[in-house]
Length: 205
Image (tube, rainbow, N blue to C red; front, side, top):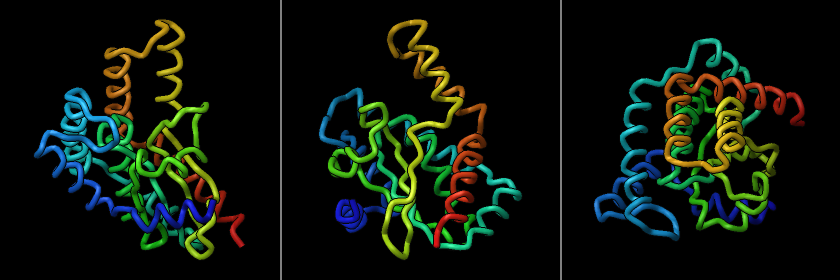
């Protein structure tokens, strides 16, 4: 696994570089990923707007800043993503604000799912390549300690319930999911990830 992580990190992007990559591709009507279609490009365009809004409005409460600053060890968050992914557009700005609030304890690096299939296959969700997937890495040893994603529990429960009732995940499901994220304001994701990090911090030697 360390070899796959090292390879991914070597080809990874900062959050700013990831945003620029998506923007540059949209200028030529493209999205990230192996598959290209007008639908995926449109999703990327919608996500660009969402991320711009979230970067301006998202807040990390002071109590969460204190918890992030209390981490004893240094970590890398290696995130598998793609520009067309609606969940990634909602969550990567949260991750970015959290790393900025961590006082240097956490660094985020982003890689594209389709360019890192070997790594993605190590972190499947119900045998699927669901993204975003946040992999927590010990900065000193480069070992993977835990992973989180592709959604916070409330969002996952919403999608599971919708699929159970309707049998499919259609555009209405996507709309309902985006509304959930809008009302949640990134708080559930922050709470889940911070508790994961605090637990890991106790275990790191």
